[in-house]
Amino acid sequence: MKRIILIGPPGAGKGTQAVRLAAKEDFAWISTGDMFRDAIKKQTPMGCEAQKYVEGGLLVPDETVVGLVLERLEAPDCEKGFLLDGFPRTVAQAEALGAAFGKNSITAVLHIVVPEEILVSRIRKRAEEEGRVDDSVATFEKRLGVYLQDTAPVVAYYDSIGVLRTVDGVGDVEEVYQRILRVIE
Ligand code: AMP
Image 1 (tube, rainbow, N blue to C red):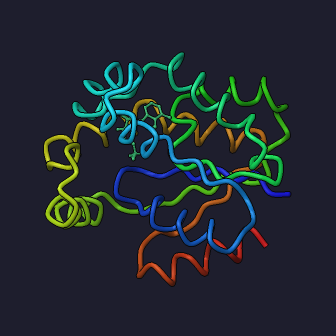
Image 2 (cartoon, helix red, strand yellow):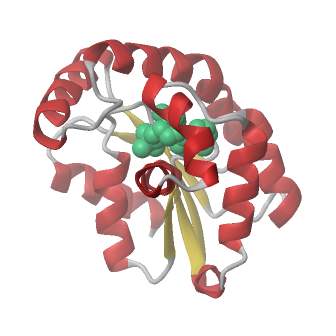
């Protein structure tokens, strides 16, 4: 059973790689970004609360995210393992996950590394193709700032407990995917 976490800056290709991994491995794929976008589209109470953060490129407060993810992880499909895409994004979230499952319960944390200038050009392209509300270049810069401030410490946290694996995220989708497979197998 594998419990994998994907971490990387906005535009690193987490979602793209998660789709491929989820198709190959028998585990539940959990994207907190997708959960929020879905809740916003349906205008559920949680979606209404999250909307201003997601559209502003800010993190949804930890209590909301942690509650959502821990509840999702109780679903039967997570018993065969899971892939977390976009969570944890703060050390407090990582600690909450550790408290719920045990600090040593994560198989690997894949840190996808991409230089900033490549991220910006990918984000421009995605904004045009998908029309994501949080994908303007200005919002991207804010999201990158949030990543560096709040999520970079999560990378250090998992490194300190020995589960961090660094993956070079530059190259085409298939190349990066092959690197990921080499790391998790
Ligand atoms: P993503 O698709 O993973 O880039 O997430 C899109 C947006 O959803 C983020 O910019 C945040 O506003 C929100 N979000 C997703 N995951 C989290 C998380 N773990 N903690 C806080 N906010 C999150």
